[in-house]
Image (cartoon, rainbow, N blue to C red; front, side, top):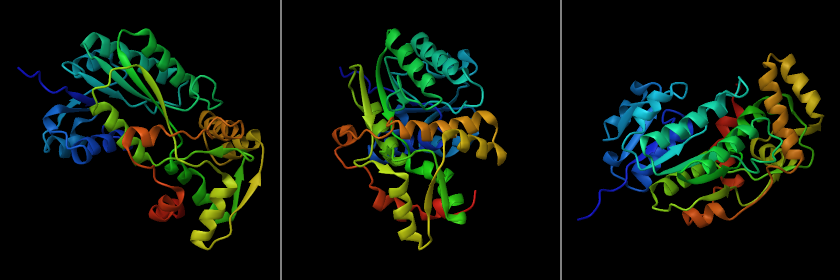
Length: 300
């Protein structure tokens, strides 16, 4: 007698990445909705998924019992890293609680969204990711760590304002970023989650080329017809400038650390892991930019 097909759970399913993973499971991989469980703090936000046969459960990362209940009966689980960046230490505590809840609920395999060079990166929240990877390694579960490179979508934080002024203040120097589209990362996560691979492995998912801020500025300028010059500043100057614009100090430090990490080469590694995993090339900068121009030209 055939054993039932494994049940697949996606946390943070009302978020951009989690929602896209569920969509790829349903539409790209044609996984029946009955095999998919989506969790969120607000179940009503996912009524559309319920209509497609997906089971929606409430899970709160600050309430471990709710996660144990939500993870019951699950074979493979995608742990999408939370967005708790404003309180240092909170995100790692949430992730550790989620790993323990998965163990307590009898989950077999966890897929986790991390970042490149989690153990050494200068990105301010890299220790959250590295600590989560260590928690997975110390657990009895099998796991896949997806070290996701920087989203193209992150350009929306800096490019619109830079285009408006004609100047992009950057502390990244000549450092490069191997950008990849968020939707590509969602596809990769869906592929891993739906597979039957139970080996412990770390995959670094990047674009096929790494770009400096000047490279990106040149492409954006050519596309929009607007001048865009990169102005070199220090990470400290960037942080001070963001705080002067009303950013909370913690968040200003986070953004400054992105440029410091870029300058240090933490985000420039290019791998073939995405293509090997999905059988297709990741979206290139020249294809992504024109398709998402509204994201980069509207004021935030």
